[in-house]
Image (cartoon, rainbow, N blue to C red):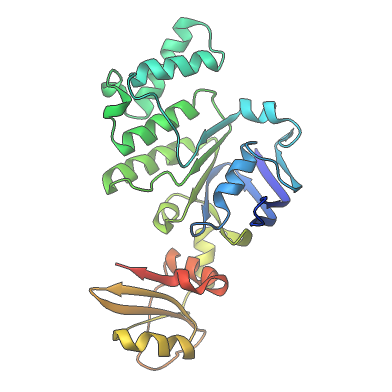
Length: 298
């Protein structure tokens, strides 16, 4: 199964050009879509999910023309948006059962078995009788995945799913997505580089509506091997270094800036060569278009 996006563009009524000739080919497995807030990630996810029309372009999922066969796409789609609502005074088990009825799963024994299976898969079975208002953020996200799996989807879209989760819930959620991606296309849209680092076999970086790169994370790391240099500087020095060198990130560590520079050869000035990570790949592309997002705090 392959999802092919060709020359997709979208401009909103307020003039924001959210997508600019986006071209992507996404195969089964976990696909990471990285970009800062406002990059166009959610616009792309909503368009793939048939929640909005593009101005131009096409989307093909296997034999399904997504833009002209919306019902066919929706039957095979699992979607967890950045924000989704739940009925607070109903248990997870009852709400999942109700949603299964709406999905057309009419045989009660089949529906009961499916609901139980999904609650086990998302590690919510022991809390199935608890009202959703009593669920933590991570539990609600896992419930969101459970409802997304009701239709046994071949395409799953999750938009900024780990924002606000504590480290344990984040790891649990990402592990769940990793298990699901073995036989399914899972698109993980996020601005958190670490979400993509361990799980994704393919990724793209998007900013200001444009795809800046697509490829395997390890290949992207190989492309900048030996080209990342680091130095810890005083606060007042950071700006002058940025004027002289290709500073891709400026990260405050214990109150002092740590600069990462992209350079083919030793930039001198006391910089040391380091092993790059996926964050360096991300900022090497983002800083070309949007320099201000390279400033981090830690």
